[in-house]
Amino acid sequence: MAFTERLRLRPEGLDRLKWSTAFNLRYRLMNPLDVLRDSLYFFKRNLGQIVQLCLPLVIFEALLQQVVDHSTKPDGFPGISVMVGLLVYPLYTAALILFLDARSRGESPRNRDLLAMSASLWPRFALLTALNTLLILIGLSLYFLPGIWLMVTLAFGEYLLVLRGMAPLAAMKESLRLTRGNFLRILVCILCVMAPLWLLKGVTLQAYPEPQNPVVAVLIDSAHSFLQLFTSVVLFRLFMLISVVPEKTDGPL
Image (cartoon, rainbow, N blue to C red; front, side):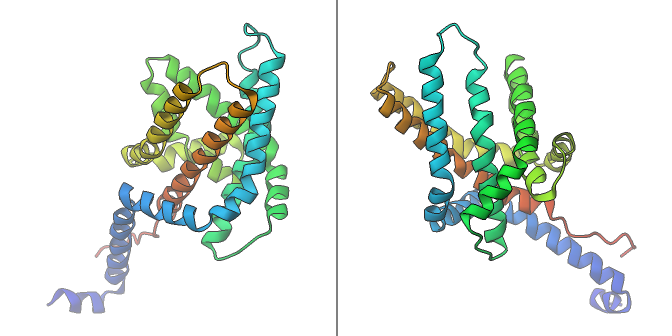
C-alpha cells in the first residue's frame, strides 16, 4: 500500500506528518540570519513608535545615572549604578515587550496604556532583573564562561514574566527549559547584535574619552541603551519561534 493511502486510512499518521512539517519549518525559520533579518525589518518599520515609547525613559535613565555618578564618590558603593538601572530599565523594557506582542497580533495599543501596564509589572520585573544581573555577574567572575551561559539561558525570563504572567523564579526556570537545545542559536543572535554595539561604544569612548562633558555622556549612554533595544526585538522573535511548539501526536504512524 502506498504511503499516501496509509495516511488516508490512518488519520493519526497525517497528524504526525503535519507536526513534523511544522517542526521542521519552525527550525528553518530560526536560522540566525533569518531571525536577524526579520527583526531588523520590524525594528526599522516600527522605529518611530519605539522611539516615542522608549527613548524618553532611556534618556531619563542616562540623566539619572549622570546625577548619581557626579554626586557619589569614586570609591562609593559600586552597585548604585545597577540600582539606577533597576528603577528605569524594567519600565521601558516591559513596555517594549508588550508593544512587540501587540504588533505581532496586528494591534496598535496607545503608549500610555503600554507604560501603565509596564508600571504594574515593575516590582516583579525589577526583581527578575536583579536576580539575573546578580547571577550573570557571579558567573562572569567564575572564568567568564558561566556568565555567558547564564546570559543565554535566562534570556527568555523577561518575556515569560511579561507575556505569561509568571513569577520571577518560575520565569527563570522556564527560560532554562526553553533555551535547552537552542543555546548556540541564541548566543549567535545575541553576539551578532551586541558585538557591533560594543565596538561602537569603544570607538565612541576613544573619540570622547573620560572625563566627558555631561551632555555628551548622556547622549552616548542614551544612544547605546536605545540601540541595545534591538536585542529585545531579536530575542522576542526567537522566543515566539521556540515557545510555540506544535502539539505532537503520540499515536504511532
